[in-house]
Length: 104
Image (cartoon, rainbow, N blue to C red; front, side, top):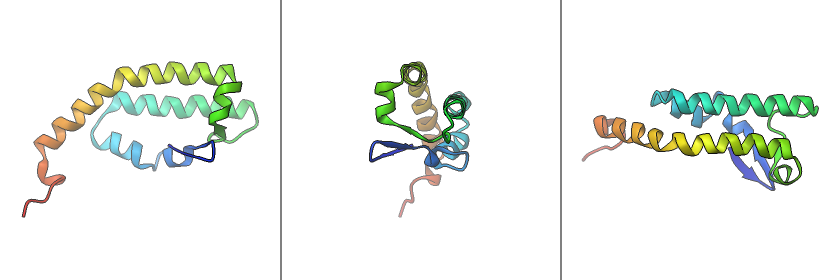
């Protein structure tokens, strides 16, 4: 998810995105489910408003209480999940350093 000119670029967050590919690679199903739920909740909200799923801007958080509530709930879950995600990724990298570092 990239932010440019006050608009959130959710296209970088799609199923083919590096974020979801990375989460799948490390078998982090809890984080994957949260990311997929985030996309689904934003798609539902934006469909109701006649928008594309990625048509949300940072200023929308200031003016749309429903969006702010959705994002706050999801972000709180993200904050609880991410320490375990970091641990999972670190353990994998330590167990498979040859996949990430080339020793010469």
